[in-house]
Amino acid sequence: MSQPTKFLLDESRMPRDWYNIAADLPVPLPPPLHPGTLQPIGPADLAPLFPMELILQEVSTERTIPIPEPVREVFRLWRPSPLVRAHRLEKVLGTPAKIYYKYEGVSPAGSHKPNTAVPQAWYNAQAGVKKLSTETGAGQWGSSLAFAGALFKLEVKVFQVRVSFDQKPYRRALMETYGATCVASPSEETNAGRAILAQNPKHPGSLGIAISEAVEVAATNDDTKYALGSVLNHVLMHQTIIGQEAMLQFEMAGDDPDVIVGCTGGGSNFAGIAFPFIGQQLRGGKKRRIVAVEPAACPSLTRGKYAYDFGDTSHLTPLVKMHTLGSTFTPPGFHAGGLRYHGMAPLVSHLHQLKLIEATSYKQNACFEAGVLFARSEGIVPAPEANHAVKGAIEEALRCKREGRSEVILFNLCGHGHFDMSAYMAFHAGQLVDQPYDEAELAMALSGLPSVPA
Ligand SMILES: *Cc1c(COP(=O)(O)O)cnc(C)c1O
Image (cartoon, rainbow, N blue to C red; front, side, top):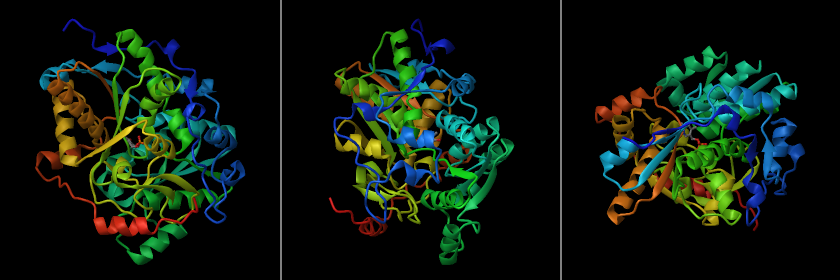
């Protein structure tokens, strides 16, 4: 193999700014609305939950925002992350396409999530906040915020969705190793949790419920703020360091991607790899295909409605316009816990509505097959969420084979699966079920969308 495999950027070339796609949007993003008045909310409405610097980033239309030096210093622990050419996967597939992946599993928590956990913790610490409350599904976000909290001396409380709290004791151990406190959600600690448990003491939990609990704790405690690991504009912006690095690494490789693939739960790792490239296109540069891959069992972009909805189950959050399955929708159990959210980031939804990105969905067994093929050719065992991106990239490579095209494919390998081996064990044992979501439940959840006059 004479062609290079790994493209490593020197630390000195790590991006100094985040990229804010709001500056380049052809149509502005619909504003978040106050659920009572249905009027656009202002920065003051968010002040109980977030420090002002992050709120200003949330509403900013500046194209670039500098990454604070103390944050870049932490990033040097694992960034710049590698861009890798998947020569062996190409060979196994027999495709004329070139496949590259950006590997975010090199972070301490094993995913892209520390890219936003670290700046969020830093801005909170700068604002004098002492405690952070948050939710976690699979445990990736909880462990990332726990890590960041440890660095900046913040207490972190994590409401972990009950099913993954029970299924993934190692993620909890990791959070506790970093010093965080972990509570199964729904819990007895909040009004939101107690209300759910009163209806169903064995409720398996959902991200929407865990968000309600974490928001309630922040809203009712002066020394506590809330941190969200995806969906919000500032979170997506923090992830753009991924795509900006990839651009520099493609210069080193002498290539340029034609197709970019990412998996979408709330949309942040997808935004991170794709937005810098979409921005280039919006400013008159090359047009690429950008493909979001979601699970067939929780298909917000491909089956949801583009409408104003709540971000949580107990309706404590503002209304945001997004692709949603309805805030009361609970997807069936599947192993990509990070992709079980009822909504999608407003920015990703908006770009889909403007036809600047495509979306597709796959069932979990097909995604695990792709992940195992990847592990057996490239060596890395992907997170179950990342398997959706692997599957999407493989499908693109096979299309190139059928069409005899040597396109360049880039995908975001957003995390490793070392804490998800029980899911791989179930797959190897033939025990993974492709359980469809309940159409009647989806219809009911969608019929309950808040009505917002156009
Ligand atoms: C959390 C998580 C996701 C889903 O969140 P996004 O905001 O859509 O990126 C995907 N992959 C991994 C590895 C995660 O930890």
